[in-house]
Length: 114
Length: 110
Image 1 (tube, each protein chain N blue to C red):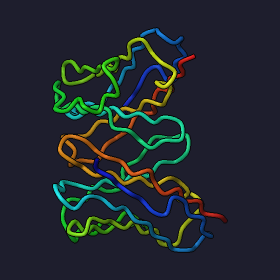
Image 2: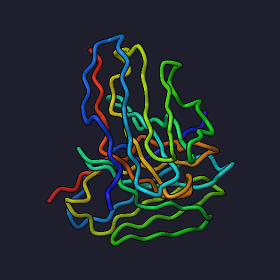
Image 3: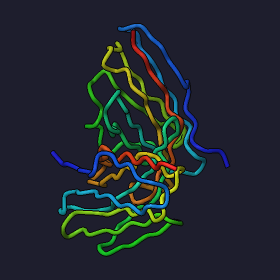
Image 4: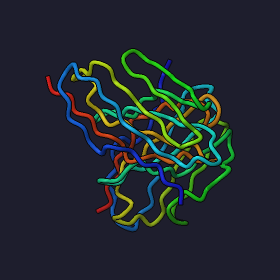
């Protein structure tokens, strides 16, 4: 079946604008994850959804970042008032249940803030 | 702050060599340890999720072991091939998040 998809694949935005990144998980996967990889850095865990709820939002870098998931499926990661340090590849993954299961990653969204 | 450390940072081997690398993680509050393979310009791909002390898992020429009491996992690649070239990431499941190491970058020369 279809894998995890993300859109857009690339986004260039001006500093101060808001951006919305979208993730479509594998059908039937209840858990969904957002990660960020900044240049030269490792994978940074941002947030995890089990169904529509996120047990721990402490990984979000600042209050400009928010994420939601509706209908237990699609998720959006919103970054308000983007800053240059937000430039990174944003990866989404899904798994059959929670963190005891392997994750399937999407292709990522490369965000560049100019 | 919980630390997941991987060593070595990078590794260059000849085709046919066997190799291994290490992931160290906190030995308390262990739930699971994940291994992923990340090729350049692709998405990370799951290799193993390990949950029990003493676990050994195998996928083709790649295998992994787990010691939760001392907080380490080894990943082994037998008879490395150029297509094994990638960054190998481990991740420690702690409460409601996965904490990733910075990876071991493996390059296999023909």
